[in-house]
Length: 186
Image (tube, rainbow, N blue to C red):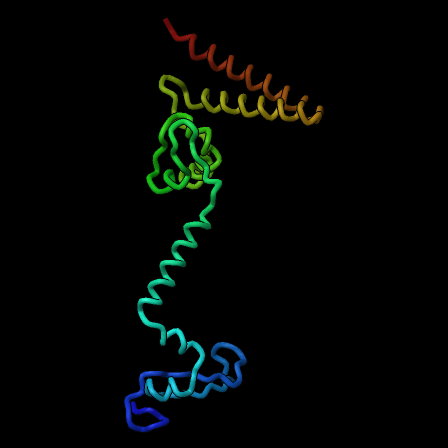
């Protein structure tokens, strides 16, 4: 395609001049297309053409300065394990903790990670030598007990009384189930 202005050189610069824009795909949009050679485009002093005029060494300097500026503006309050020096960024990249203290330092990150991976932040696997129903009852007792403690702390005594009764009922059920399991035929 030849330059629309000089009609001599190949058009290497393609410009869409928007006169009216009603929205993407609208039929009332008015766009004028210009196809120019590099010489004619430079003569028109188009916006953005000054960037192309810079020598490569200046562009390289700008890139280096930008990279240094980015490094200087890096966050200074990086979370780090005081025991082993593992950072949260290192944990994200490697997926490994450095020591046992890292579990406390990065607990909020790890809890969210476990929620996303397993759907829960606590392990609910099987306990060897125990009936799954017994394990469920024990977990429910623990859960009700922690809710009871929270209700007492919040001074919600009606809820606390309900939870106390539930803990007692579940404990009795657990004891009854244990008695049935231990009374095996001799």
